[in-house]
Length: 253
Image (cartoon, rainbow, N blue to C red):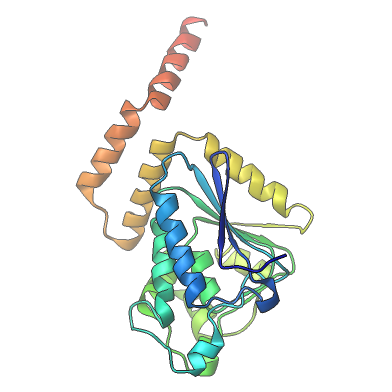
């Protein structure tokens, strides 16, 4: 298989965003991050995409940011870190569509943040996670720490970032990093079932509530945008038809 920067594929309303450097354990270099940002922009602009699955080729989900770049002193800025990797996490989190991380193997470093930026994280039994920043003296960037605190809370964030120890799958599920845990044989079925469920839901309601949850979690909910999203969802054909069907059912006894 030819190894490339991340790939974007489309199957109906489901987009699949795949890391594709298995021989390098899907390490994230500047070209990979640029490709991910471009793909996120494409997905965000396409209203026919209902769901995104973030996945990876090979045995390891991702080894994280390219350590060779770090060794050259490319630590980046305080907000988004080396090569702006935090901007990729922010772009993933900001997608209007729900995003599922299919975590079929171990993940390290910056990949911990990118998976955390997804709305759902389905892990596999036996996987491990390591955030080694504190071990090597790297101070993590602000956007990644903020995302972790918002999504899994300060105690779990300290366990991942400050303790800097390897975390097993059961612990990841317990602390809320993983949404669900599946066996290797059941991982695809679990991810596909969730993707199908999300694809079938009313897109305006899904998008509006996803944005509202993010705003509430960060303490930055835009009240006008929330009201506009609610109004749009209730004017949408999906809601109108569902209510008409409910009334018809009641009339039919």
